[in-house]
Amino acid sequence: MTAAEFPDSLADVLAGVQRMVRRRLREGMTAPRLRGAQVELLRLVAARPGIRVSAAAKELYLAGNSVSTLVNQLSRAGYLRRETDPSDRRSALLLPTQAATSRLADWEARRSALVREQVARLTDEERAALAAALPALRRLAQNLHEEVEGV
Image 1: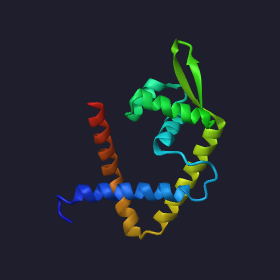
Image 2: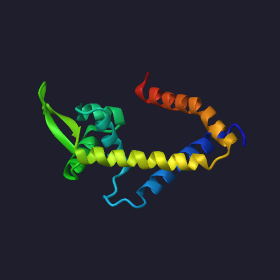
Image 3: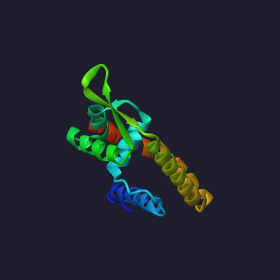
């Protein structure tokens, strides 16, 4: 592979791994499927309970009205609760419901088990190569984040 082909190959592999993990995790799900943006918002709210809609929009790089639509969908599905911000009555604070917390915990456990199982199928050399690549992949993610943030 040439140096010019490497970035596209890397992007394709990363996207393919993520797509296959999502597809495998959807197998056997009894609850209705959530879209990627819905899951991202749920994960953010679970990690930062009480986050405002505007802060969530900024964090997810989405328009405020897009996040509001996601909040409405997830609230109707029983995964998010909105509370009025006591410091600014015009703003809503987002909180995960117990159903969201349970669903996310189940998803994370299943994802961890799936990836652990697949990594175990690799050779020692392949596992070592993936482990060695993690710092560079983290830096790549950080560079992308900083570029979007304008840092």
